[in-house]
Image 1 (cartoon, one colour):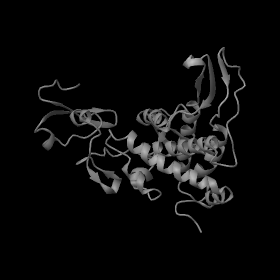
Image 2 (cartoon, helix red, strand yellow; image 1 turned 90 degrees about the vertical axis):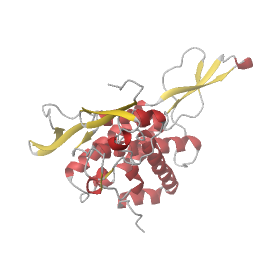
Image 3 (cartoon, one colour; image 1 turned 120 degrees about the horizontal axis):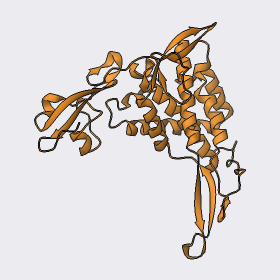
Image 4 (cartoon, helix red, strand yellow; image 1 turned 180 degrees about the vertical axis):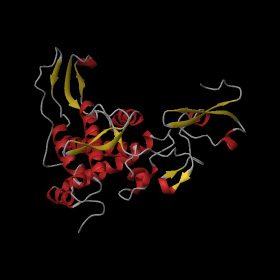
Length: 301
């Protein structure tokens, strides 16, 4: 039976690797939790991701929010698979390879490295499958999603680092056993959030006999492999507008007192906020924000 939201090739992949399905479900849960946490201080707080695969327009229209979600999802799936190899939860893989370089004095390779290569191979097969279907959405959207998914995997690859455990008499740490391990998904999400904030708007433009995605305002250069890209500008997400996928920010629970007093990325609903705060609006690039402070505190610039 076709699973909701999965294309045929994804179902086939899961049927031939039954243990992989549980890992992908775990990755989906991690994406929801991590996205909500990463954007808890922003106007758009990733709430509509919980409706997957039936996204609202904020994630359907080729926006920068969509770019982030696709990048994070691709990274999370490969991340979870790589870690599952390490823990022995996937019988088709094992620990990652021992690095070829010789460790320094007092260090030795050991432990069980995260199997990044296997995670990338299986993760990309699953993540990219919908975009490689001939009848799946517009060509521009498919190219955008494929690009952003690859950016997510690049950030994942860059997060691979040496991790060590100490050995020695009385905790002297005379010998360190080391392996290559991935950073936590929350750290990868923060890197992707920075790319989200500086994402490039693109257009689908003919070049020769084919059409390519090129930067809208500076189309003299190709799209960089390291940047997130988007096709449609986002609403400001201040007011609720279901037609454009905006849930609004009114009655939002702020993550801390700091963001309540100085919500640089949130809309301050001025009528209510002015009762206790001094607010003033400013515009920076695409993002309107209200900088708020208590009357006794200097208003932030």
